[in-house]
Length: 137
Image (cartoon, rainbow, N blue to C red; front, side, top):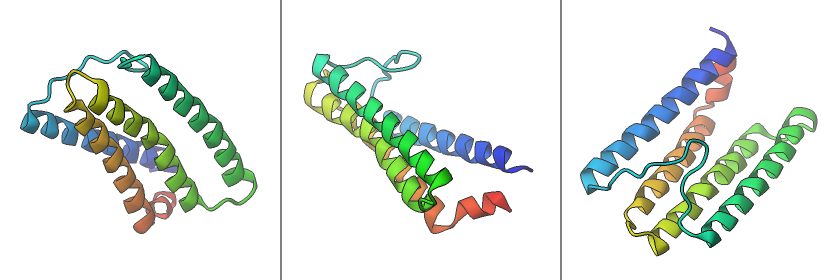
């Protein structure tokens, strides 16, 4: 099995675990499901939209820079993964804050926090158990 398929399998497994945990939390705490838009989600207010898009654009620019550093400058891959996880989860934490402070259903913030924490946990496990080297072999 080549490396791309192994990586896609790992990504699918991560997405499945996150979805399952969110499902369990939603059922346990009786949190209603919010319909999301296809590429984004519904912002709670105008301030949330501005901050969210600022975080997204900043994360994109930093990711492009980090990918360049990893590919051409020898940037440590583990540090790249940690920074990538923090950038991806920063959007979740912004969403959690605005859901907690300004939403009609503040319990939605629990789902956003859980998603971010699970993603960071996956990255720590990937680094700790050197999963990337296992994918290459």
